Length: 279
Ligand code: C2E
Ligand code: CA
Ligand code: CA
Ligand code: CA
Image 1 (tube, rainbow, N blue to C red):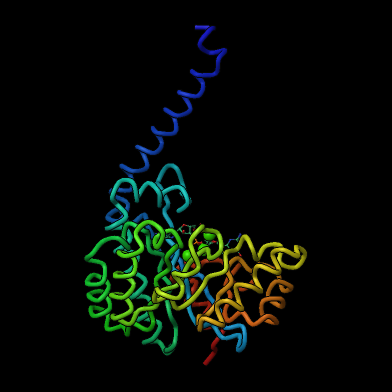
Image 2 (image 1 turned 180 degrees about the vertical axis):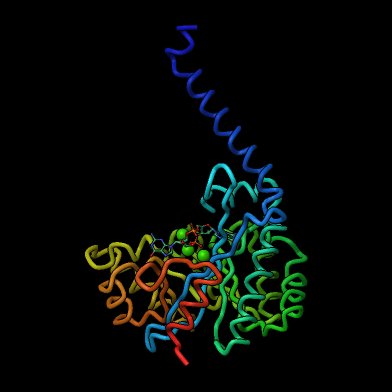
């Protein structure tokens, strides 16, 4: 009726219905996305800011739905998490990434590393260390070439459990980095206690680094904090030469971003590597 539509409630509830109908459709489609070969792992190159050498890649998941087209991971990863599908999808990404690195090593790109994003749900699974060990063993990859990216939140919810998990992964020899560093609300003390190897400076701080005094100060502080704790730093979302110059001159170790390359398919990433290292 008129009355209902005027107070906005009907509109609100119908957008929620549309929203959840799409989510339902996506979750159902996601269930079969692996077997239907709609998922692909893309790779974004990372360089050492001192030597300019490509030292690794970040694995980023891509999903192309046959009717809806490309769906952003920002939309489907949360759905994979709430539906439980993240366990199988995350395991698939890990295996693809490890296999790809093994391939590149075989081709002569011997020091290439891969960083894989880990959902907090995967991180809380006690089976995770065994799973990771199995994948590394299957593809005969040394654990030192695998980095797992976690967000600050994982340590916040369950500090004791997080510490146990980080110890187990550290024992395996894989490296842990804190993604989106500086955007969470965690206490810095966990950096001392936890087996963290690298801090990933969030792109929200990098974006205005050339103009914004506060962002400059924050980035410099993160680099100094990391260095005094013996941790490495990588900046993400680097899009301009002046951002790179700033990071380089302040001692940031590594960077990734559109300036160097967008995330690339396996084939295109191989072409990229070959062009950087011609025989
Ligand atoms: P993230 O881990 O922080 O990944 C960085 C995001 O920034 C990626 O978006 C990447 O494509 C984008 N990016 C890279 N360079 C630039 C740049 O220079 N400028 C700008 N503006 N953006 C840049 P993407 O691929 O859409 O992924 C979004 C988020 O989805 C990721 O954020 C990550 O949290 C999640 N995600 C992606 N793949 C996976 C996965 O395999 N597993 C899990 N658990 N999460 C994933
Ligand atoms: Ca990441
Ligand atoms: Ca990030
Ligand atoms: Ca981010």
